[in-house]
Length: 149
Image 1: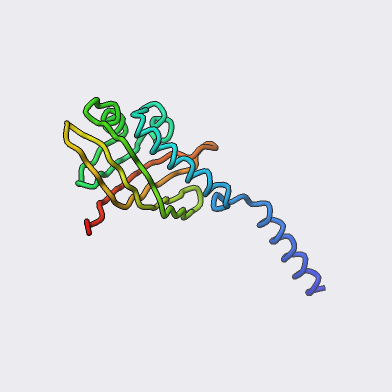
Image 2: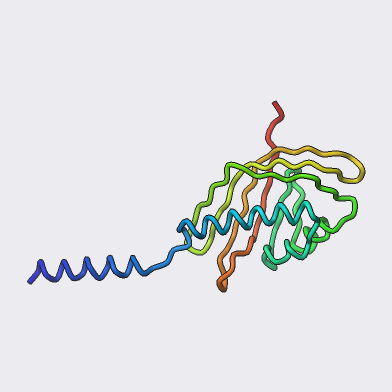
């Protein structure tokens, strides 16, 4: 009887785990990586509407130089006619899940012009995404430059 009870508990537990959908599966990782690439494309195209759909209302952005901006300032910076990104590339992406939160890290390379001055940055980024109401939204983004070799 005891053995039968133990087997039933194990089978029920395994069944419950099999039915539990975790945001850590491969399809969610692929979706987040796609969203990261969409983010980069929106930056190059200065498409603040596309970015607006990807970031949360209380989004916080920390730039490589320490400047911190909220959602509205971040979107205003994208619309700034002095901001002329020509190229953004990301690589070495890793996605780590914590319940309904995902941390995406990677390396970025961006080139362009700002206020008439060219820039060419290579750095690391960390984006924090939250899954809410069936949708992933970025709540925080942080970049830091890598030392030039």
